[in-house]
View 1 (cartoon, one colour):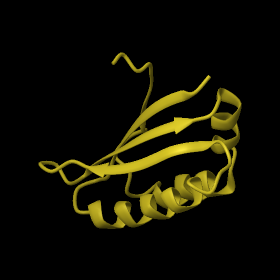
View 2 (cartoon, rainbow, N blue to C red; view 1 turned 120 degrees about the vertical axis):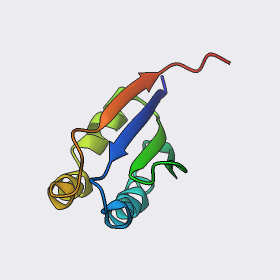
View 3 (tube, helix red, strand yellow; view 1 turned 180 degrees about the vertical axis):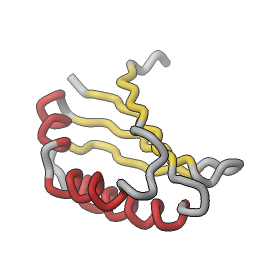
View 4 (cartoon, rainbow, N blue to C red; view 1 turned 90 degrees about the horizontal axis):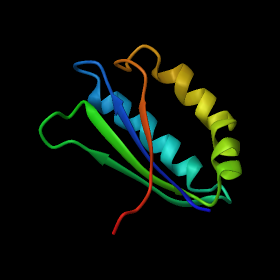
Length: 96
């Protein structure tokens, strides 16, 4: 069963471009993963510090493997000084 995930990430004030660079690196590596069906990054038009990932994974096992990847750990470490709180993760079901 596919896993739909929306992740909201916020950078601290003045660090939107630095966060975007880190997120684009994360996107590039994540899209290479076998279980990745979709991994799209969006940036809020009004609050440039807010980034949104729309993701689809083949399975929970694939998502678990994604979360254990070195590029995830690297993002966590590299973004620690510029992330504004923990990422907000939402597993969803497509309604229509």
